[in-house]
Image (cartoon, rainbow, N blue to C red; front, side, top):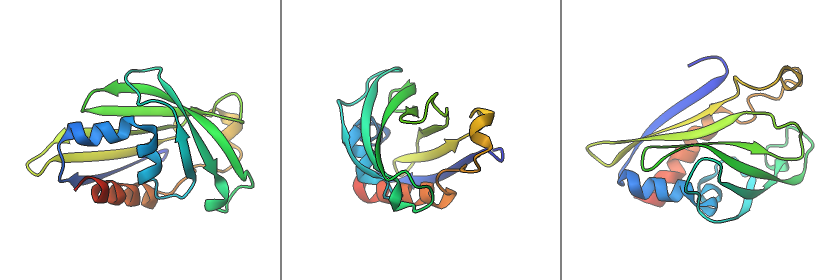
Length: 153
């Protein structure tokens, strides 16, 4: 790991295919979000790199940056069925920031070892200077895995 990436892991008592299905569903992202920012989502489950869906956000949940309610487009950047999914977002801030969120799934004795990560190592310098990264704390990734476990087990 670098100073610009968080990774957390948790064993989930569910098979990778079940976990992956939830992560492909836009509403699944809202269901497991621990930050409180994701309010609702629109779109079909993703099936490949380049697929997109819309998430309605509320930054006031973090109370850290005055953006209020807004929406982002989630763009899938990595898609390996039952093994990995990653995305970036595009929204009102243009050009897109290029931070990445993702999950890696590995079969385990109890179901799936899930690794969640947030990577802001590729953001442009103009965004680095704003001192808003990381957008979410590492603890939020860990909490989201807890909610994922609750939804899967």
